[in-house]
Image (cartoon, rainbow, N blue to C red; front, side, top):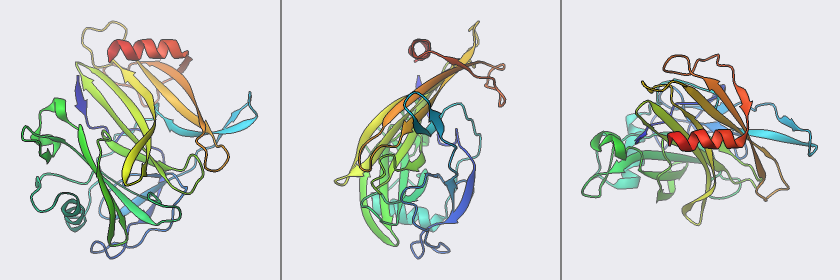
Length: 290
């Protein structure tokens, strides 16, 4: 199976706000979003978007509220975001210098406090691959099997670069959150594989620590064989990931529910009816198509 770009799938409603002032022409400083859930920019130029809070699901057995980290049943076919050339050039020059693949683009741009509590920072992610010479290049410069197997993270405080680190996060950063309530944001990235009519995707929750990216938790997200020509039983599975907010500074427990739907031809219908299934059925199908 070959790795695919998964940057524009599975989103929820947003409200707009603006990016950092002075770093790039025509941009303004974002408000502090230290513990808000903030998703990738959708649309163009310096518009950013904030994820609206989803109603918490009641955990009846523990008497706690469980918040949704991600719902893999949701599908969005919005076009990838675009960014101003001056912004792209400044970020890529900081990351890679002048000798860089001219086809590289910013993949994700999110706001939050990533390196310290209370910071007002902008985090950029650039995904790509490494060519035969070991240089970081755009996906178009590699075979499909190599897509999204390399990446870079850059953090800016206004006009000032704060840090950069090389890290493969998959397709895109889809959410900024603060699951442990310590005032420093984590990021949720999503990536996956596609091939022969089969699609799988997973998520990773991580944070910046000591100038590096630290992966905290990974999740199996979804899988389907809707595009298989020879499959008699076409179906899709998806997980919903929730967590119960713990005492400040501690990582929460995560809770997963699993769902199944039948394919609508070679795709998943927007109004698909999802039936709850057990973890074993979810894992068996995921393993079978992976």
